[in-house]
Image (tube, rainbow, N blue to C red; front, side):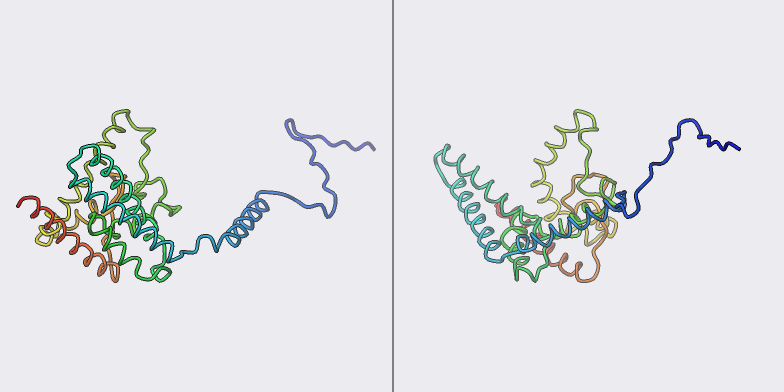
Length: 246
């Protein structure tokens, strides 16, 4: 008796796989990728380890350049010199300010006293204490929050209306004034109003570009550091206004 095998339309007979032949599938590729990432991390571990001499040297040099150029820009009687010095000051201070990213990632013990030094030299004087980024930036790296309303650094400008880009630039340029108002006026007043305090913590205590992001109130040791830095920044902001007015 003849025996026939019929196949459904659109299907093909499976190819025979020799015994012992390796099978490469999705799970195997994922495992290979993880192994490669681990190997890369091991090979570059010494490159990402914070080196105190480099951190301190870079920060101090940036701030000496930034503050020095700022003094020249403010006191020079020559307009060209003042303009050049102003540009140099912005670059130097921006370089120093950019260390807030490192402060938010590093373990404080890896570079002793750098957290305190950065806040004294940069964070407080520029009204951007480290708590404005610590506990905020790490949310941007969380897989469950990335690209959502809980991501403080996600703003799909390419998908928004054309006028939102220039508006974003204008708002960013006004940030120094907003920080001055936040610390000199709103911080002290918020001590008298729990509702205002909640709004200050949620909406005006993070270096974020996502207007829908709402920050959670700090707890425990983080709150202690937050309060100390905020008091210092508020006193400095009030001093700046007093000096300007008088």
